Amino acid sequence: MELFEAMRARSSVREYRDEPIPPGKIAALQQAALLAPTSLNLQEQKFYFITDRSVLNRITEGMIEVSRQREEWDYLERLAQRDGKALFGAPLLIVIAVNSKNNYIDVDAGIAAQNITLAAKALGLDSVIMAAPDRVFGGERGEEYAALIGIPEGYRFAISVAVGYGARPFPPHDLKPGNILSV
Ligand SMILES: Cc1cc2nc3c(=O)[nH]c(=O)nc-3n(C[C@H](O)[C@H](O)[C@H](O)COP(=O)(O)O)c2cc1C
Image (cartoon, rainbow, N blue to C red):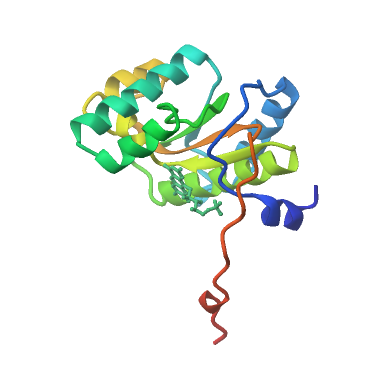
């Protein structure tokens, strides 16, 4: 799929089929992550490709637990409507962790996340960028969850991307052409 076609077709998909992603497509997503530019070309970000159901389940349960502790009733209500699937049933969650001592780390991680989402679309997959797992990785028990997937000391969760085959179409967002200003 051509780049602009992928950009136009991409949307955040929040319901996935229970279908694994073939290894070749996972390898292509890994390439997309590594191809992302980084400030000063430091490339000090790590990409955790999580497909292990038990790990995905633990993250899901942790997100629900933290939301209860934080009394995020609206979020919990939305989760209840989709059977507690905090990761939308996606078979793959890519966690991007960054070296906390560097500058522009969240920009770097965002660029990599977008590389991944566009590559996913071009590969016939769907995705959604997710800050929500920060509830576990950035929460009180963050160290436990960092250890669960192997995030080393000095690195922290920046953003994640859930990937899989969408169960139904989710329309792309409306554009705001007024946000483009010619000077
Ligand atoms: C930095 C960032 C964090 C996001 N975190 C979440 C999230 O935690 N959960 C979620 O459902 N969507 C999340 N999204 C998806 C946005 O809600 C979505 O991109 C936006 O509504 C526009 O819709 P579109 O992606 O379909 O164009 C996030 C997007 C970005 C860029």
